[in-house]
Image (cartoon, rainbow, N blue to C red; front, side, top):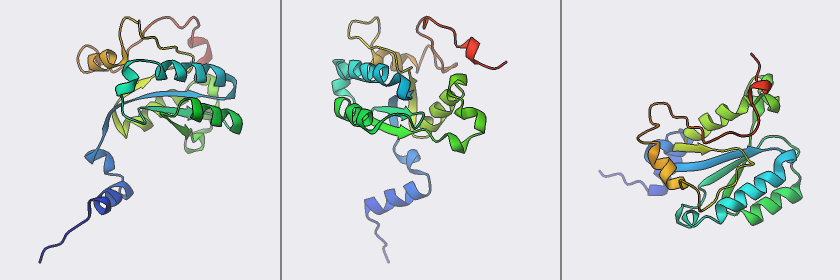
Length: 173
């Protein structure tokens, strides 16, 4: 007796069991996060990515933007969706973590977001919502991701330049 399974049924079961990422894992996603006070920066950053020549070759859904706080208006969310249709918006669920994670100025949510997304993809390119991407930069996104397989593979972290401010003053010792 032969038993046949429809492909969609197999994928549904794998998803329900939390095993889908073993079958299909995207190569990379770009990830950012913002709250209401950084909406305009996040929109500008997203639009700069959409204008890149190379972004036209990326898979749909190659970028995820986490909403950190319930202070982004519905109008702003709709504007973001309309101007950056390639982005998947997600709400960061800080209630899954200890209460101190919800103190956004301590930035403890950043590695948690990266860890969440790494459950789904091989590589995460995390950037702050104020970053502007340009076609005439020293490296493009594809080159940066390829270097993650070689030069930066052992550490997994790469810094690109001075942000103009120090995160240290916000971090607890």
